[in-house]
Length: 247
Image 1 (cartoon, rainbow, N blue to C red):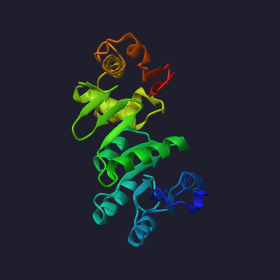
Image 2: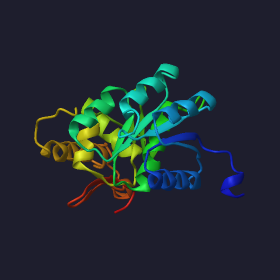
Image 3: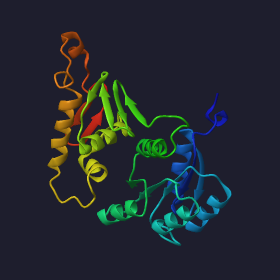
């Protein structure tokens, strides 16, 4: 069956005043299995919302008629639960803080990877549109995280994590097999006004490895079972970290 014959994964609204960006995103997102509407400014975005059931908005901040923060406010007046992912060339930390403070669900800066945009969209949709009757559980390989009960299991064994370790692991899991930088981790796991050293990320990755990837800390005593435990948290030197089964 072709992509065109399949039921769309979700309906997205892409709002950006640059025609090349709109066309690139809409084509790529349709290829990924989404139904896509596009708008060149805030008023067109609001018009689409009036006539269509939209599951998520990819929203630029720099628009010709009103900024993305105002568009988000108006969209949420009509649909308070509508997920919004900010996509913008502005990478100032104040914009990131404001974007999330006004209710944005995620934030990506240009230039961007299309694979990253698709992964972020799906992660936001999983958080905001769970399947009916589906438990809020993230699963990767033999690692499982329950967002409601705050329980984590690896190889069938319970893993005790601090709140920050839990948040860090969750971020790695929703971005599984995608390398995330230390700055991305700081942005999503720690507060945006964090004034400490970036080395805090290295420290918490180390804590998490000891709890998730160590047979001894998991209580695995059988030598064969210990050898079979595949490390999941990997360092990409000079780039960041990735959750992956294998190097």
